[in-house]
Amino acid sequence: MSLKVYIAGELVDKADAKVSVFDHGFLYGDGVFEGIRVYNGRVFLMDEHIERLYESALAIRLEIPLSPAEMAEAVNKTVAANGITEGYVRLVISRGAGTLGLDIRRTSDPQVIIIADTISLYPPEMYRDGLKVVTASTIRNHAGALSPRIKSLNYLNNILAKIEATDTGCIEALMLNAQGEVAECTGDNIFIVKDGVLKTPPPEAGILEGITRGAVMGLARQAGLTVQEVAMVRHDIYIADECFLTGTAAEVIPVVDLDGRKIGSGTPGPVTKDLLERFQTLKTGG
Image 1: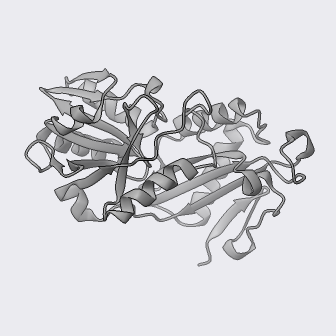
Image 2: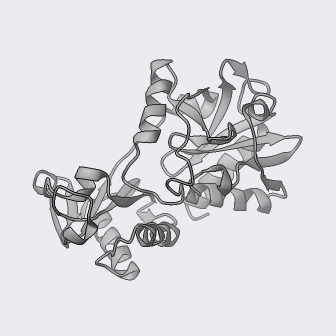
């Protein structure tokens, strides 16, 4: 069955899903997006993702031509049309076609594009054994230049850091902010466990406030853990008892090494394993 893509209010074959080369999403990365998981045919945490999508759009003065309820209906329709029971939704809103210039007043017809497909980010053995991560020299975009809370179509900052990771044989890289503090990885939020306390960088460190990040923090509190959003530097990661990443595509994945320093025992720790199990239960509706 040919993949069906939602575009301009219609479901069309993948080969026919096109936007103008004058679309400012293509020309300038002018737009916003969300990545959403599907488990057992159910779109996971859709309300939270759609709320963030509309907040990102508001921040860049992009008017989405659908209401949130209509957007949710379109997502469900696309998932169903592709028979996705376990997969991933990429929801993209572009500014629309315009002139070869930055003036948004010269654009029109914002595009709503929904792709529903399967996804595999990390191989299964990495969830079992953990990731090795390096620190990128590419720093996180300065929060004063572009709010990290906007999930925009321009991911060049993250891509450059990802290149550094893959050049060293790693899949993921840690990114610092302009102050030299830990921010996040190229596609995931980061957590550590130290002396039984779960810690993660705060929003002001320049992070995207991940939906999975928030879900895992909730699960940790339900488990009786103390959760702290605190500024951290690389040394805090080096001396942590455990470390893991969270993200929509990654879910919860252990980190066992940063910059050649073994974290804790060098294997996924008990808190990480417990939270991974709790997340597996949450995502399946248990």
